[in-house]
Length: 391
Ligand SMILES: [Zn+2]
Image (cartoon, rainbow, N blue to C red; front, side):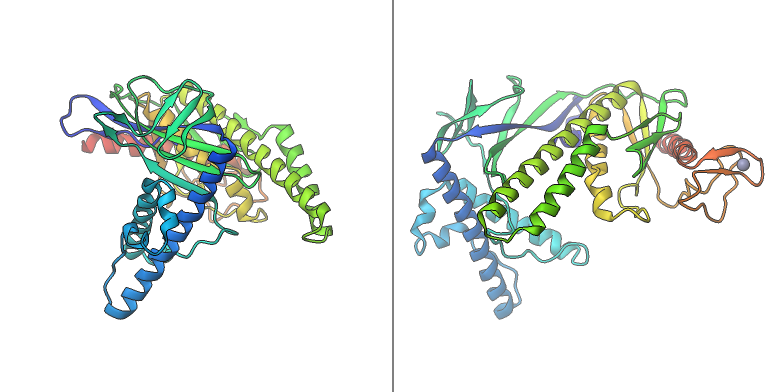
């Protein structure tokens, strides 16, 4: 997932961004075996370092994580896999503790990994030596440190000037291998685009529609996606009737995983296309800062998470930023649903059942979600102007 634009210190008008290309891998049986070993070693080293951290902490009150090198004498099988992958586990664990110490209420203490619960993956950084980089792509593959060239299917190609920083190899529950290749891209910073009321859109994320815009347009999840959801529910019911461990169960669970994966891919595709359309059509997009976490009565939390609002926003942000445009997150304390967008009267409450309501002051009749989108847009623009005046 491409990240935020970062300004460089020199102020040369260049910006650094990160972008990821995800490819399907077709490893040979030997390479697949090496991947399995690497997944296992990464879990092993994580758990070893974590248990030592716990012990040191209990004995000395000090936080300390030993480096992977310490374990190689007692566990020589660690030498069979890419050392970079083990170093990355150390970095990930250190980072997990940094986050935890900073904010223990929101982030739990790093926990032990189990094959059953944790995904199979490892990460390795690219090192560029005089003799060349340790990781690079070829016409139809990726060269990795221990595995050699692994066949890969590219649906898009990196540009020649992109710098390969690291790769993450993962195996899905359906047994497919993927590799996410992270690139650092240095580019000329885009000229900032100044939005106005005509070129700005306000979006209200919604559970019934994917989003509703202030001009009344909305995106519904495509019909086939709803049909697939029903299929998924059916597959789930079938699964619940079968005896765990039986052959029918194994077959049903594989079918269920494939369907789940298929739906997730379709959703991603939908989100990419919608965010692209909006980012190209408008100069600024206003959304509510808390639109993703707001619980919708009657809709289970997992459902709204599933809808992919978080991913939608991330996609929107980078697609806008790359064009010098802004995603404006409106503060949560603005009551966008209860405020009349015509006269500004704030009502005590608007029930989720009220799809339309009439303003008691000015008599304007509002669609609940379009009205909210209008308020989000107005507030977003006001915030933008305020911020640019302060600059
Ligand atoms: Zn009114």
